[in-house]
Length: 179
Image (cartoon, rainbow, N blue to C red; front, top):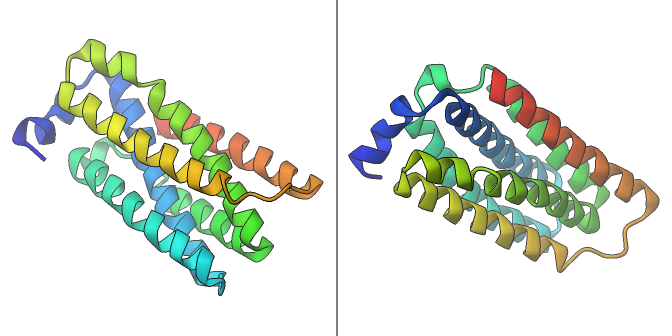
């Protein structure tokens, strides 16, 4: 990370600080989703999937954690950890198809969320931040696509769960943008 990128967070307009705060909150939740999966699942395929994705999400979180100042981060970090952990636990309790469907639902939302930031970051003129957000978005799209390839025809309960996951992700972003 260059010095310019490290200090850029201090100079962002308020609307972009809100977006980056929501990104930090989301990456926090993502790390804890995989920790929840790993806490419960005994399925080696699921565990390998979760360990691989956890490593990527931890890299994203480290970036935002170091890049944003303490006052720029969400006040609800403990809530995002807890919510992520329980999402992962519930998915893992449902088995392989629930894990993959849950990750697909989360990452579908995250890809859209990151893509919605491109124009504003580009207008701000921070090409390094834009490249970072795009790289993270591509990582999330890879996670979504990997999970989608393993989703089996979902039951009515799993479809409802995925709608709840998507709705919860959207609501969490709204809160994290503000607090």
